[in-house]
Image (cartoon, rainbow, N blue to C red; front, side):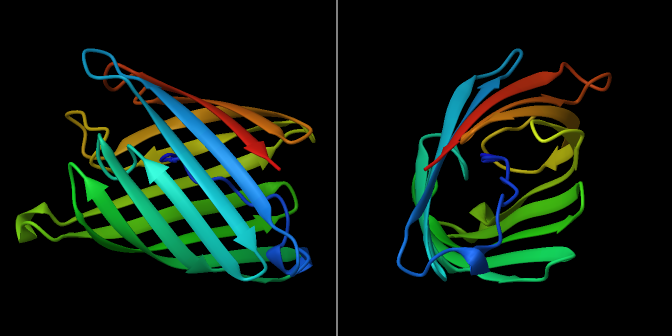
Length: 203
């Protein structure tokens, strides 16, 4: 999730195997997460990605930190039929409140109705070594129907912080054609819950 996240997106589980995508076509995805943070600063986290065969390009804002953008380039790897695996190692440049260089990895595994995904990165702050940090967005999802999925999610990042080092929660997502609508609830019953409203569009 934007992260997303997220997102963040929160990390978006690939809807198709990259190997089946035409090498001459581009596939785009825009995901926007709205963080409703109790007793804190609410914010919006947009993530735009473009894929052309093995090439993956991505742009994020408010992901690594507030008022911070990042640009990424990576390579798509995909294999498997019964168990589908997608890996995208990346390298990114971070600019804004935090400046740095970040290696990252987006990974997803899908088996029947069950999906696992994670987006990881480690930011090397070019202004101070003490500013280096790791962020991760793992999630597990179950497709109840073709248009409904739910699951568990966790998040560790710098932009969204509470007294908890790792945010944990659940989500429910709806899909319609090329649209995705997902609601995340973080820290229910542990701290004041944070709600993340996500909308995604593939084209």
